[in-house]
Length: 386
Image 1 (cartoon, rainbow, N blue to C red):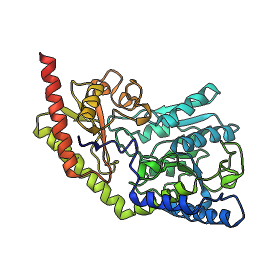
Image 2 (cartoon, rainbow, N blue to C red):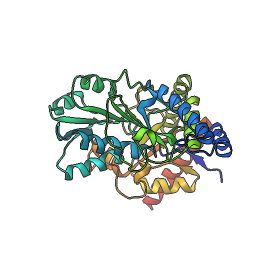
Image 3 (cartoon, rainbow, N blue to C red):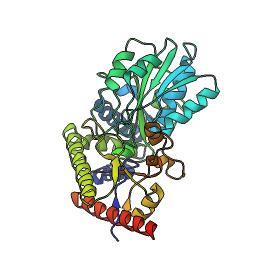
């Protein structure tokens, strides 16, 4: 059986060029970047060059990037350390109802510690209202954390408008850009972003690696206690081969390549939706088909068939998709994103799947997926009638 991967929002396969760079580093460069001898200096050169490449990708300075174990650690650090560092200025934080669990869970913990969190609602496009945001912003707000692009429905939040509004406010602006980095144009200076989280495995890089951008002047203690690595901002010996691979993945994601991928994925969306329509499948798109969205994410409601049944049957047919965030896919809990968009009693919550495209997918993959999904839907509905 041929297996087709359509779950790239969960993780992506490493690019062969990334694997080649990492292999070379593992074979030739094993030193600890904290040592001053020859081997340490060789590792430090790779570390510094990689940091420069990554910083330039978001229009930041090299010393503003801190390497972490990934998006979850970057998000947790930004949330927890900002709250603890700035609690003398206030206890109010603003976020959205559709953030990743790496944002929501530390915020829920902070609520048990006396902090107040406003969870902004979203409309059926998966977007917040700027009027709601302005109404929620208070003098004692110390942090705003709003994701750049949603990992389940692909909605692109008004990051520039939020950052511009906060430029004259005491609140620090953090954005979880894990799903958007490598596809959208991100500029921390233009958008007045103070803190930004990224993960390498979402753009064909290695797992268990990311970075946290911290604007110059933002200082808080390391969340991970230990050595003085990362200029005392994150303890732990840097993974030089993985960091070099991360930089290579970013080098490959040039502005032209990012635009080409967005265009390619938008074409896949139209092809898939047209195929389902032509085959008479009763479905609806969750969110909106907007040119500004993350084009690799498509969330659809297949009316009358549960998410679990669809996932199981598609897997048996050789297609990997998900029912929502990969980080909660092991549970049977319904998507908090779809509940926020449509209400907890909407059938969409229990009958939707997420398809997410990657650079290795082809038009033939989409045609084959449409054929498989069509056959599954018709078989399941026919069985239900018997």
